[in-house]
Image 1 (cartoon, rainbow, N blue to C red):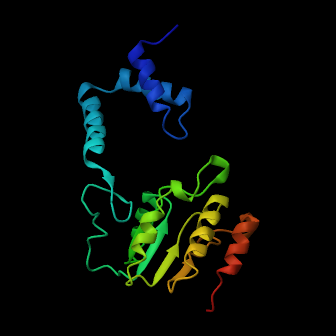
Image 2: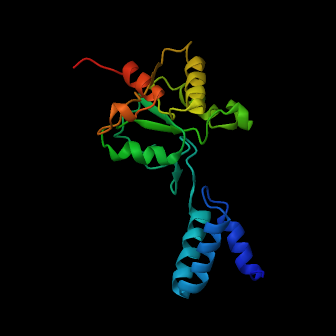
Image 3: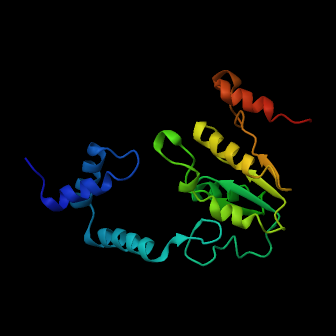
Length: 199
């Protein structure tokens, strides 16, 4: 038995999301057809249309935005001497939730991954280097993930900035709050030791 073409097309479209396999996509598609009313489907279509029409990357930092520049880049109250470099725009949301950092950001929109054919030229590095020519920037905080690709990217950026007067730091990685040492892997423990500080 074969689904109608419209459902097949919806299933294939839903499979473009990470972690959504054929069975999950099929379940979502059939739920849409059998359980959602026309108003709900129209709301979903409108939301996708607004993303397509209104959302773009900030030309300065690469954050996703609906204003040019984004609300962080145009905020004069923020500290312009520090930039946190993150892999994805969602990382900015996590940082902002802490309400402890009031500097600027730069979104790489990826990481260097030779095994996947992704080199430095494939991520948002050129605009970062251009921004760093601004003498206001005194520190770059590298906040890429603690995996091979994140470490490779952080090390690459650090080497690029060696000849500048900019302080390059790396966010500390270690045991999460409430976590138990016995369940931590070796890399997490090593990074926790390296990031230790005086009390």
